[in-house]
Image (cartoon, rainbow, N blue to C red; front, side, top):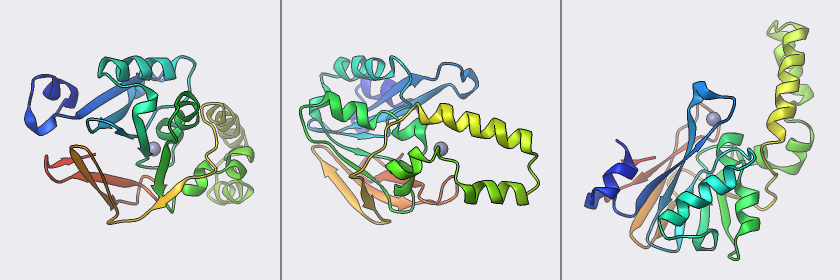
Length: 200
Ligand SMILES: [Zn+2]
Protein backbone atom coordinates (compact mmCIF):
# COMPACT_ATOMS: atom_id res chain seq x y z
CA UNK A 1 0.00 0.00 0.00
CA UNK A 2 1.24 3.51 -0.76
CA UNK A 3 0.90 5.06 2.67
CA UNK A 4 1.33 8.63 1.48
CA UNK A 5 -1.36 8.25 -1.15
CA UNK A 6 -3.70 6.63 1.35
CA UNK A 7 -3.20 9.34 3.97
CA UNK A 8 -3.66 12.10 1.41
CA UNK A 9 -6.93 10.46 0.41
CA UNK A 10 -8.11 10.91 4.00
CA UNK A 11 -8.09 7.23 4.99
CA UNK A 12 -8.45 7.34 8.80
CA UNK A 13 -6.34 4.19 9.11
CA UNK A 14 -3.29 6.03 7.80
CA UNK A 15 -3.89 9.57 9.09
CA UNK A 16 -0.72 10.76 10.77
CA UNK A 17 1.42 8.22 8.88
CA UNK A 18 3.48 9.53 5.97
CA UNK A 19 6.13 8.11 3.67
CA UNK A 20 9.22 10.12 2.74
CA UNK A 21 11.27 8.83 -0.20
CA UNK A 22 14.87 9.76 -0.98
CA UNK A 23 16.42 8.76 -4.35
CA UNK A 24 19.72 6.84 -4.27
CA UNK A 25 21.96 8.40 -6.97
CA UNK A 26 24.00 5.74 -8.74
CA UNK A 27 21.81 2.93 -7.40
CA UNK A 28 18.83 3.15 -9.75
CA UNK A 29 18.22 -0.57 -9.32
CA UNK A 30 17.54 0.01 -5.62
CA UNK A 31 14.98 2.74 -6.22
CA UNK A 32 14.92 4.92 -3.13
CA UNK A 33 15.24 4.89 0.65
CA UNK A 34 11.97 5.20 2.51
CA UNK A 35 11.48 6.90 5.85
CA UNK A 36 8.20 7.21 7.72
CA UNK A 37 6.76 10.05 9.80
CA UNK A 38 4.35 9.14 12.60
CA UNK A 39 2.19 11.28 14.80
CA UNK A 40 0.72 14.73 14.78
CA UNK A 41 3.60 16.44 16.56
CA UNK A 42 6.10 16.09 17.93
CA UNK A 43 6.66 13.36 15.38
CA UNK A 44 8.65 10.11 15.28
CA UNK A 45 10.78 9.19 12.28
CA UNK A 46 11.32 5.56 11.30
CA UNK A 47 14.67 5.31 9.44
CA UNK A 48 16.39 8.06 7.45
CA UNK A 49 18.43 7.68 4.22
CA UNK A 50 22.12 7.63 3.27
CA UNK A 51 23.98 10.94 3.49
CA UNK A 52 24.22 11.67 -0.25
CA UNK A 53 24.70 15.36 -1.11
CA UNK A 54 21.25 16.93 -1.12
CA UNK A 55 19.49 14.04 0.67
CA UNK A 56 18.89 16.03 3.85
CA UNK A 57 17.26 18.83 1.83
CA UNK A 58 15.13 16.33 -0.13
CA UNK A 59 13.83 14.88 3.13
CA UNK A 60 13.42 18.34 4.68
CA UNK A 61 11.24 19.55 1.80
CA UNK A 62 8.97 16.51 2.12
CA UNK A 63 8.73 17.00 5.88
CA UNK A 64 7.89 20.69 5.35
CA UNK A 65 5.09 19.72 2.97
CA UNK A 66 3.54 17.89 5.95
CA UNK A 67 3.91 21.02 8.09
CA UNK A 68 6.95 19.88 10.11
CA UNK A 69 10.58 20.89 10.50
CA UNK A 70 13.48 18.91 11.98
CA UNK A 71 12.74 20.56 15.32
CA UNK A 72 9.37 18.74 15.38
CA UNK A 73 11.11 15.32 15.36
CA UNK A 74 11.45 13.94 18.89
CA UNK A 75 12.92 10.52 18.12
CA UNK A 76 14.33 8.39 15.32
CA UNK A 77 13.76 4.63 15.41
CA UNK A 78 16.01 2.58 13.13
CA UNK A 79 14.80 -0.74 11.76
CA UNK A 80 18.44 -1.89 11.43
CA UNK A 81 22.02 -0.68 11.29
CA UNK A 82 22.72 -0.29 7.57
CA UNK A 83 23.76 3.10 6.22
CA UNK A 84 20.76 3.52 3.93
CA UNK A 85 18.71 3.61 7.12
CA UNK A 86 20.88 5.57 9.60
CA UNK A 87 23.10 7.70 7.30
CA UNK A 88 21.30 11.00 7.90
CA UNK A 89 20.74 10.69 11.67
CA UNK A 90 23.71 12.93 12.55
CA UNK A 91 22.76 15.57 9.97
CA UNK A 92 19.12 15.62 11.12
CA UNK A 93 20.21 16.08 14.72
CA UNK A 94 22.50 18.95 13.71
CA UNK A 95 19.67 20.63 11.83
CA UNK A 96 17.23 20.38 14.76
CA UNK A 97 16.86 22.66 17.76
CA UNK A 98 15.34 19.72 19.65
CA UNK A 99 17.36 16.92 21.20
CA UNK A 100 16.40 13.86 19.14
CA UNK A 101 16.79 10.42 20.71
CA UNK A 102 17.87 7.58 18.44
CA UNK A 103 16.91 3.94 18.97
CA UNK A 104 18.06 0.66 17.43
CA UNK A 105 18.05 -2.97 18.51
CA UNK A 106 20.98 -3.78 20.80
CA UNK A 107 22.44 -6.30 18.37
CA UNK A 108 22.91 -3.65 15.66
CA UNK A 109 24.03 -0.74 17.89
CA UNK A 110 27.74 -1.44 17.30
CA UNK A 111 27.31 -0.77 13.57
CA UNK A 112 26.80 2.95 14.27
CA UNK A 113 29.72 3.29 16.69
CA UNK A 114 32.67 5.59 15.97
CA UNK A 115 35.04 2.64 16.43
CA UNK A 116 33.33 0.46 13.83
CA UNK A 117 32.98 3.29 11.30
CA UNK A 118 36.57 4.50 11.77
CA UNK A 119 37.75 0.92 11.12
CA UNK A 120 36.27 1.27 7.64
CA UNK A 121 33.37 -1.08 8.54
CA UNK A 122 35.57 -3.90 7.31
CA UNK A 123 37.11 -5.67 10.28
CA UNK A 124 40.03 -8.11 10.14
CA UNK A 125 37.65 -10.71 11.57
CA UNK A 126 35.36 -10.17 8.58
CA UNK A 127 38.30 -10.39 6.16
CA UNK A 128 39.40 -13.71 7.70
CA UNK A 129 35.85 -15.04 7.37
CA UNK A 130 35.62 -13.98 3.71
CA UNK A 131 39.04 -15.51 2.98
CA UNK A 132 38.02 -18.79 4.62
CA UNK A 133 34.87 -18.71 2.51
CA UNK A 134 37.07 -18.59 -0.59
CA UNK A 135 36.44 -15.02 -1.75
CA UNK A 136 39.34 -14.06 -4.07
CA UNK A 137 41.69 -11.23 -3.03
CA UNK A 138 40.65 -8.91 -5.88
CA UNK A 139 37.00 -9.21 -4.87
CA UNK A 140 37.92 -8.46 -1.24
CA UNK A 141 39.79 -5.35 -2.47
CA UNK A 142 36.72 -4.21 -4.34
CA UNK A 143 34.59 -4.80 -1.24
CA UNK A 144 37.03 -2.77 0.87
CA UNK A 145 36.86 0.16 -1.57
CA UNK A 146 33.09 -0.02 -1.58
CA UNK A 147 33.02 0.18 2.22
CA UNK A 148 35.22 3.31 2.07
CA UNK A 149 32.51 4.82 -0.15
CA UNK A 150 29.76 3.65 2.25
CA UNK A 151 31.61 5.23 5.16
CA UNK A 152 31.24 8.64 3.51
CA UNK A 153 27.45 8.24 3.52
CA UNK A 154 26.93 8.30 7.29
CA UNK A 155 28.06 9.73 10.62
CA UNK A 156 28.72 7.71 13.78
CA UNK A 157 26.15 7.88 16.59
CA UNK A 158 27.67 7.74 20.05
CA UNK A 159 24.54 7.92 22.19
CA UNK A 160 22.34 5.33 20.49
CA UNK A 161 19.67 3.85 22.78
CA UNK A 162 19.33 0.05 22.50
CA UNK A 163 15.81 -1.34 22.15
CA UNK A 164 14.52 -4.90 22.55
CA UNK A 165 11.73 -7.11 21.29
CA UNK A 166 8.45 -6.05 22.92
CA UNK A 167 9.49 -2.45 23.64
CA UNK A 168 6.84 0.14 22.83
CA UNK A 169 6.94 3.74 21.70
CA UNK A 170 4.01 6.11 21.61
CA UNK A 171 3.21 9.63 20.53
CA UNK A 172 0.20 11.73 19.62
CA UNK A 173 -1.93 9.47 17.47
CA UNK A 174 0.15 6.29 17.33
CA UNK A 175 1.75 3.40 19.15
CA UNK A 176 4.60 1.21 17.95
CA UNK A 177 5.66 -2.22 19.19
CA UNK A 178 9.15 -3.50 18.44
CA UNK A 179 9.29 -6.98 16.88
CA UNK A 180 12.81 -8.41 16.61
CA UNK A 181 13.15 -10.06 13.18
CA UNK A 182 16.85 -11.03 12.82
CA UNK A 183 18.02 -12.15 9.41
CA UNK A 184 18.78 -9.19 7.15
CA UNK A 185 20.97 -8.10 10.08
CA UNK A 186 21.20 -9.57 13.61
CA UNK A 187 19.34 -6.59 15.09
CA UNK A 188 16.80 -6.10 12.31
CA UNK A 189 13.35 -5.16 13.67
CA UNK A 190 9.85 -4.56 12.41
CA UNK A 191 7.62 -1.97 14.06
CA UNK A 192 3.91 -2.67 14.47
CA UNK A 193 1.22 -0.01 14.81
CA UNK A 194 -1.70 -1.98 16.34
CA UNK A 195 -4.53 0.54 15.89
CA UNK A 196 -4.08 0.83 12.14
CA UNK A 197 -2.59 -2.69 11.78
CA UNK A 198 0.45 -1.32 9.91
CA UNK A 199 3.74 -3.20 9.96
CA UNK A 200 6.88 -1.19 9.15
ZN1 LIG B 1 19.76 -3.26 5.12
